[in-house]
Image: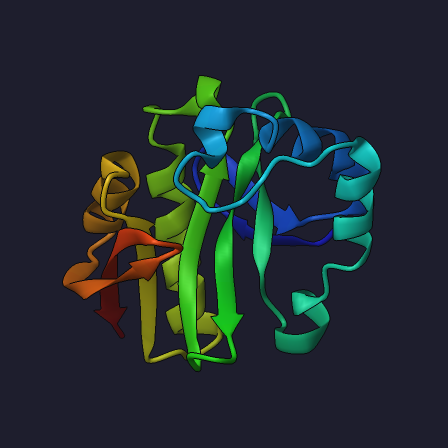
Length: 166
């Protein structure tokens, strides 16, 4: 297991195939994926396959990371950075089990991800994207210091774009 980041309550590490059950269950909750444009996995084998083929760590030396609570090693969800080659930009993203919402975990892990992006990866800008209707994610983006820069088409829904510069 490769730990990437540590915060007062959490550590972020690379996702691994043994996370498949948690990863599968996370995407089964319609409220969790409501604003993502993603569809639920049909079977845990799809989560296994996704994790087996997830390669941003090798390509870019970063990606989405498992968020683990220190006190009990609970898998809370994921957070991290993603490079989009078609846009030539890096975004911060997060997804958590509903039972961990409104406890500051998304803000804490996203803020740590920004710090990693700027201080370790030497990025100059990181963006955040959300459906306009996803007020909870927008609040997180604002709490971590991102500024609204415009709208975009988010899978036939109105999306909002935020960014932060180093």
